[in-house]
Image (cartoon, rainbow, N blue to C red; front, side, top):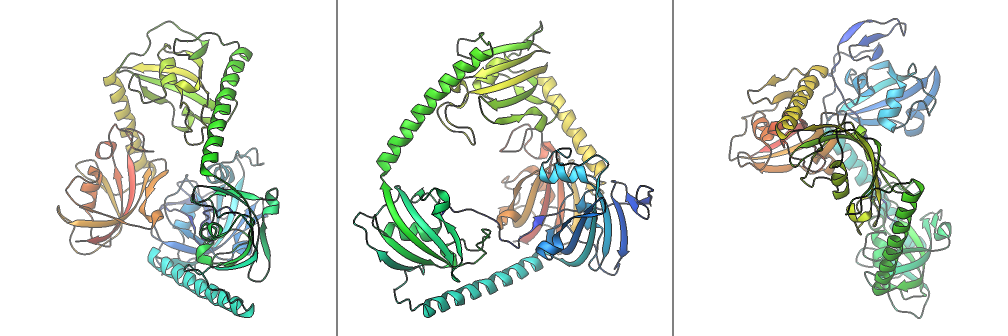
Length: 574
């Protein structure tokens, strides 16, 4: 059975918050007021004795959603209480902004643009799902409880402990009621022989083929290999099966049939697998049908690559023929200009400003400059993009539009790269917007980053103090004691985001804070300067200009010249 990582059922969707200003009544929805960000709201009950939620707090709510006065979705009916964590809004007038306005005990109604919900949260085309620009969702919300992250985690931990204990008691009762007298393995698995085979046992690195049925302790069938054309195969030791299988199957001989009673820790633990709930003990009937050696697997993989290479080369030639593309460079790059102008081409050290769309020949879309901004800048001759793409851009003048067909040798070659298979030919449709000299390119990026920083402060009504270095710090919850100084070890929880809201790193999501010594240059300058403003227990937001972050360097998923936003909590100072 395949192993999947699915979040624990009661862990929450991240929801976010921003303070909004109350504006005058708006006539679009009678009786509703409108915030400066375009959120329509009406309170039925307000408990002003309670505090508004802070960032990283968790809220418990009942929520009903209506579209044109018809119930669109009722979380209360399907899930009971909704748990959400407070964080940043993803668009103006967002649902998260509504949550930021509510205190424990409040009930209110909100109108929020439906097309924004569809596109931002579900990546759907609003028109394709029947929504128009004039459609609004009406959310009816009752705020039942506001908890700190620590309080919420304590509640989750207590619930987990209760479920674990119930599961262990259920397993013990099952063993007793069914008079199972075999000795369990060290990990607690009971293996009961059903039929003996005559083959050998498999070892790590070999592929096994099995038939299986899986049941809950009450006898409910929750899975079967019959749904997978009669059998299921996986390679031992590669993590494609639950831990219980990785232990039991190597104990079996080819042809063996066994019943394995697997405790939840060796099955899916706290993960919800649909009809298999968290902390479920499972009973498997397993038949080991066949074993493929590691040597044979390697031979099959080699043959598969040879077949893929031949298929790719044939597809490349056919595409050129079908699209009448004949021009090519000595390296094998083929190209066809849709629009061709006279003028200079990029030179070493210059920056080519382009728009592009990329796809696998005969396959999936890979991406486009539209998803990265108004354009994409490439430092020509620095090897920062695929060899074939850089060579093609070197043929272009400003205003040119062209299609470049990259053979796999000028793309990712014979290796797979992410979702791109080995031997993939790629197609780039490119428009060259401009060619910038090194100094002009840098200045353009700096101006754009500075404007983005200022607009972020303005659009989000940031009231934090701007430091002399350019850093802006917003205190969300005051700490106590003294601020850290150079040489002290600081332990922090954080979530790092780009200014468009995309999260690139989070110790909160990993569930593990980080520690570092202040003043030793182990973190970016924005952290060195910002953390020094905070106290133990303090929660705040660091808004860091690019020159105090990673400057003009690309770091992982962080583009060059990126201003960064960090939500930080100081756990300890030593």
